Length: 339
Image (cartoon, rainbow, N blue to C red; front, side, top):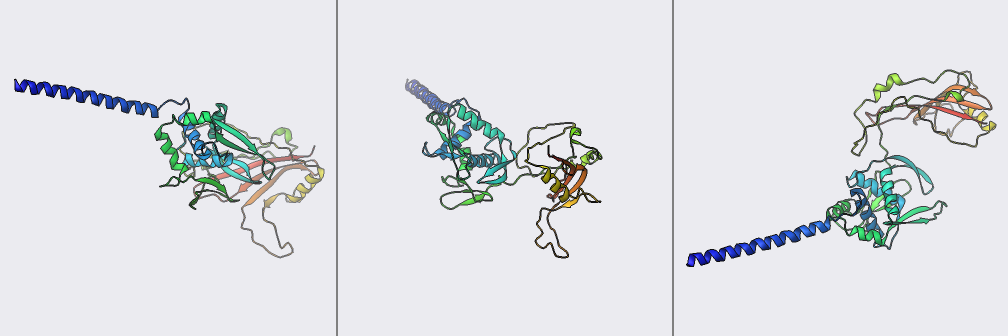
């Protein structure tokens, strides 16, 4: 009878233990579901919104667009964002610079604005060109509360100084962007370090712009030179695009008149017996001297056809020194005319 009574007590104790474990398991599941509550956004958009929330300081600050572009790039390199990026010319404090900009990141910023999760502000600058600023909205703060702790911790890797909770802010020093904290820590961003890949190009001038002269030369026989494995890409590439027989034309209106065309023809040697040659970007400070040295990369110009006051067509081969293992055969067709 005593053994039966003890067995009954053990059974009751086991049942109570099972119930407590189920309750504990249920509470953990509820906690997980709260952290992983669906925000209706993609993983990249969740992380981007949280990044903006950190720099908005609860809606008290505005984050400038160039600084956000820098942090997005740093996040791509650190595998926080699954975006692609490419070099693009931009104007920073009246200076034209090349930056590694993510178009996908910019698209997600606009999407967050469309959903009224971010507010936009246009603020004028000393260069009279307004800068766009962003700030998280109350609606955005509500969405941030649903973002999982895992995503937030991943964003912390790029927004905070390592080992602390000090925000890293992007600062422009006139030449480069730096990530720095209030305590004095700073490191240089590589957003201005554009990456090189190997390629071979040939000069092209549309036939409707030609006035006689020889045709442009093709470098198709040198295409195999670009098949090298060396590149400077820091991102993980996951797309392959194959194109065939592609011609790229970049057109721009320049206020040229007949006088400028005459001067250009004289400068590149169109009127000389032997036309063209090398052109240097360096300014000769001693034009009356005997000899000189030029350490700059040179551009080779070959005249195709010209009229003294109306137009000039020429091939330009860019001979910049590239990093070891990178092959770039850069030959462009250039056409200028004064209508």
